Image (cartoon, rainbow, N blue to C red):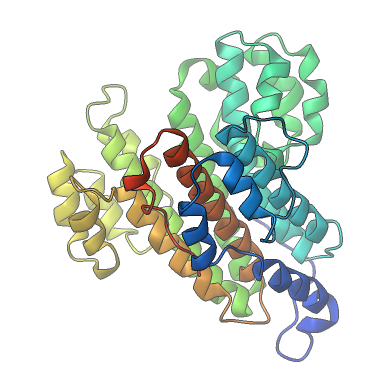
Length: 356
């Protein structure tokens, strides 16, 4: 999207005039994030019905009321996500510029995942209504109403995708032919690269505490994607080293020197050697490869740390992004514990990532 205009948010003396009320609501929502004692109680449950009873004493309340027994982990995930979406919409519907645009940026990441899902389903001639049901509710967009006229990828591109908020990214990075010919993960990473760079530039435009907090968070997200793209590309014959490097976001602690080296890496050991000089990521690879704790878990732990630290600041929008991500991690924790209970694998139940 590139060019930004309009009002920036206030600072120390003026922030609360427009955004203080919504920040106060958000910090109230944050009080409802599960505590360590809540997780300890969940881990002592013998079945999902016990979990349902425990949730009543938390901020989740009776969110599973009316659900028939036996409860499934997918139901718990859906209902918890619905609660998160309601909280997001409560904030977004009351926000004015520039917070409203910032909240829209948060939703664009979920839109990308939904768009990729629609492209994949269309290529495989899946039923459109079935695809919409699987879309993340934070990434829904108005042109989804026209999906009934979609019969192939060309229809999807011309009638739906170019009318989404992602249109500038799609038109700038992809053609109609690319949707047919390009690997779906390359499409996802191409769109996400454009999105991250645009979001980063918008936060810089807003300045102040928003820029300070979001720079660290978005730089980490860019580095995580660069590392994952590199590792996942090993053995992928359709992705050359030059093509791989084009997918790396042009920001982050690794950019440009580290990403330049990652683009030439041949195996995981070389990636480990490249990251050895970056103190932030050095332990990720020693702890998160060929170990009980995965590399993905190390990424999630650091993401939780950054988002938790965002609440130490005031007079910026970083807390709005951080809250959504912390709640997402909480949902992953709940689903993990529920799955361990369902599959009688209680010895692994404590491998969730605590938040506060």
